[in-house]
Length: 296
Image 1: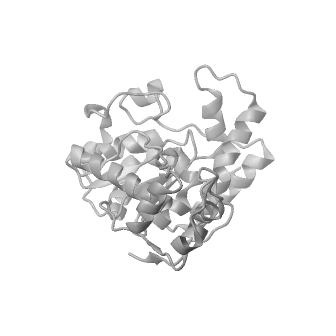
Image 2 (image 1 turned 30 degrees about the vertical axis):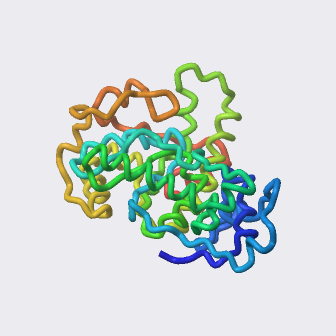
Image 3 (image 1 turned 45 degrees about the horizontal axis):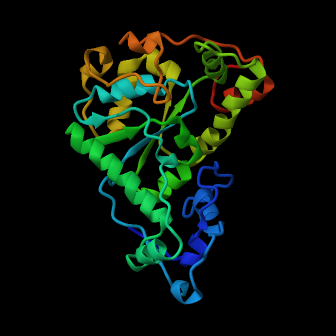
């Protein structure tokens, strides 16, 4: 693993906007990490504590986790069910790692962790890594996939924390995403608000698609040709394809919990169902449909 040759004073600037989506693409040091380094702490350490202080990236217990980068309502729960049906792949409910934070009290705990070669950023990465390891240990499997839609806002940091991570870029026709949001039970939002919500995901998703170099998966192809697509995914992940993946309803995937994945009747049916086709009506959606190779 490499070493972040940046002083603690500069790294400690990361603390106020850890959850803000990245605005620039810098794979060596993502925008989200730079933001944390630039944030001010209430009581910064004395200068004698920060001169020539370097924070290494700790060895990971899970060296090559898999992260799904996708917008909401793009079929990521179906993808999780199919992958979790594999004997070697654990794809749990959404983990929301980016919202799991560590807080160091300025002074005692901050100084203590510095002496151990750690800061808030790396402690969070170590905690996230341990969560993934625990999930693998519990499942008895050896490949873990996190499909949280919020990963689209923090993919640069995930790549920074796990240089050997693998990424599945899941695309769905933009109109399909908005239509799915519109058809959710209890939806009261306007069409304009739903499009705005979807576009918040599309922008960083498109940057990830053009930058990460992972495997791109289309929801429409996954539902139309599940064997071919899951074979491609298995080859990318380095595991043998298993036909049982296509019958995900035969396996226990845990409870369907609010805010942790799709809970619709379609996903609960245990069967892969054909995706609907759409024609884009909004210019803002058409922009991404065209970029992603869909007929607008």
